[in-house]
Image (tube, rainbow over all chains, first blue to last red):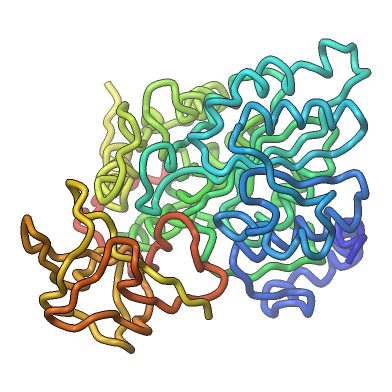
Length: 359
Length: 109
C-alpha cells in the first residue's frame, strides 16, 4: 500500500502488451467506492507514507470533516497528525506557511470554497510566493483541499467556483478531480508535490460511486499533470472539469441519439492547463464548447477558448462557445438549478457551434 | 446507519412552544428534503414544517393536541453512516432529461 504510486508506474510500464485485456476486465486492484471514500483512502495512505504530512482544518479531526473526508484519520494517525483548528481560515493557512517552513507537508482544508476568501492574503501573498521570495530556500509543499462548486442546495458561500481566481496567481497549481479514480490518484500526486496545490473537490460528486484502480496511476495522456479524454468523438469537443465532466458525458450520450459524436476532455489540471491535449482533441473535432459552473466573465473558459484558438485557428469550424454560470453571486437553494449549466443549456451551446456559418 | 434527531425549531417571534395538529409522515417512511413533515400550531399561526433532510423516519414525538417546547425532539431520522450530519444535500442520481435536440449537416471536409 505504501508504494502504490510507484507500483502503479511500474505496472503501467510492464503491461502495455496487455492493454486489450485491461479494457475488457477490471483488474484485481479495482474497488468500487465513492469519491468521499477514495479521498479518505488517499489521505490515509499519504499520512502512512510521509511522516511529515499533517491534516488540519475546521472539524477535520474528531468529527472527520463535514463531508467525512477525514473520517477516522485522527483515531488512526493520532491527534498530532490530524487535528481541529479554530474557525479562522487566515489562521489555518498562516499556520500552513509556518509548518511548511519547518519542513512539514501541510494538508489543510477550508471547509467550503467561499471560506477561502478570509485566507486569500495568506494564499496569495505568502503561500504562492514564499519559494520565489526566498530564492528557493523555503518551498511551500502545501496541499490545500477546498470542497468546491455547487449542486448541494447549500447556503451562500457554499457553492462557489474559484478556479480562475487561484489560476491567476503565479506560484499556485490548481487541480480538480471528476470521479473517484481521479480523486484518489490526483490527491496522492498533489500531496507529493514540492509546490502549493489548490485541490478543488467537486462536492456534488462526493457520494457517487465509481471504480478506483489503486495500482494503476492512470495518467491519461501519459503525464500526471495532463488532461484526459473521457470519451472519444469526431464532431465536437466538450471541455470540462470537476462536477461538469459527468454532466458532459451525459450530454455526449444524448447527442449521440441525434448522430453527433462528441469527445469529452476532462481538463483535470486548471493551472497549468494541458494546451497540447486541447490542441490534439480540437484539431480532430474542429469544434469546441467549454463548460464551467463559474461566472462567464473572466472565467477559465476564456483561457481555454484562447488556447484552442491559438493552436487550432485554421481548422476551427466555429468560434469556441462557452456554457457557464451567470455573472451573479452564486444563488442558494433550488435556484442553483437555473445557475449551473444544465443539459439543455449545454446542448444549445453545441447547436450554436454546429450551425455556425462562416462569412 | 446513524440516527439524527431534529428538535422543534424556533418558529419565529420568540415563541417557545407549538401544538401538534397533524403528522404528515409516519415511522418507517422514507422522506425527502423539504417534504412537509408535520402541521403545528403556535399562538400566531398554523404552519407546516418542511423536512431539513432526507432519511427514514424512525420516531416522531407527540400526537395531535400535544405541546412540544422549542428545542425538544420532534422527529428522528435514520441515515447512512457516511452521510450523517454532512452539510447540504446529497444530489439524487437521475436519468438525464432533455428538451433540446441537435440538428446539423456535418460535411466531413
